[in-house]
Length: 394
Image (cartoon, rainbow, N blue to C red; front, side, top):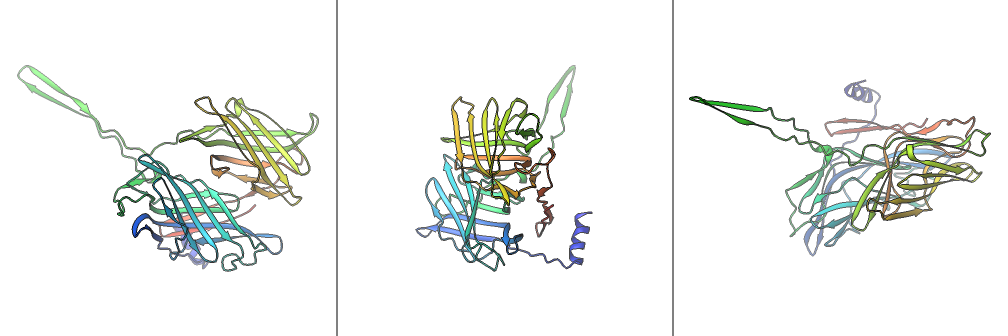
């Protein structure tokens, strides 16, 4: 079905599509502009409702927000947008020399707010923190990205588009210079080669060919990691009790240096254990050791802890652990599956990226995956005006 036919179908079904004009804010320090933002953000939030069911709601960042909690410093700044009854979206920026980047995005949402979360069984304020792809921005420039950037976590998916941000405004005036995101940078074809020949008398002179170097979209530092297939058995004569398929990349900071590396499953030795309440998977390669611990509360399972030790390109050892995670959650007896690339901020220094993820640490029968809790994302985008999403669990 073409996207135009789909759009007509949505209208025929009476599906409501909302337009948004974006959110524009100016943060000042001593009456001088120090941080500027004009952007559009959509949140898709899954939460538990009465009857032990999961509902998913769509929330657009409203035009009317407050900036309480925002701040500007010479090397760090915070953009915090508050809206509704206790909801906020904030971005932390750091500057290093002539460049700056966004370190993290945190979305906090109040499940007591029945306007956004009707029939919620929780009264807490939940939050998710992710690392966006906003980096290498010139200090005296605005970061610009008209393209969609979708950042996924288990319970919240965020989509950013039409983004214009200057996190460090110099002398109180917003810059007219832009640093565009990779998705917005067009590819320019190579200009044709031209050879000019001039003949004077018996002498022939040939001007060397001139070419114009192409401008291309920057390619990722690393290729997508290879998907590894891991299965754990309680003994040599039994079938698998833990199954995990995924490609893994880690990104980490040591001092001012940021480095990424892929886990190569071809050179990885794996082991693990299966229990009623806890299961573990350990992956050991030449460059890193990864320990995943899954927890089971009888109804749902989740990735509860992650411990990663890696050898950096300089030979130093990097190690980070988080034992309070709630990732990859699914019902016991089913599996968690997501084919899209996902990124998770594990600690302030460690981010992981997963590809073609499929895990089942409990309730494996006959050595094969059970039905996956698969989130299908379908978006319709017409000239940056319409966005529609269909969420399906299978």
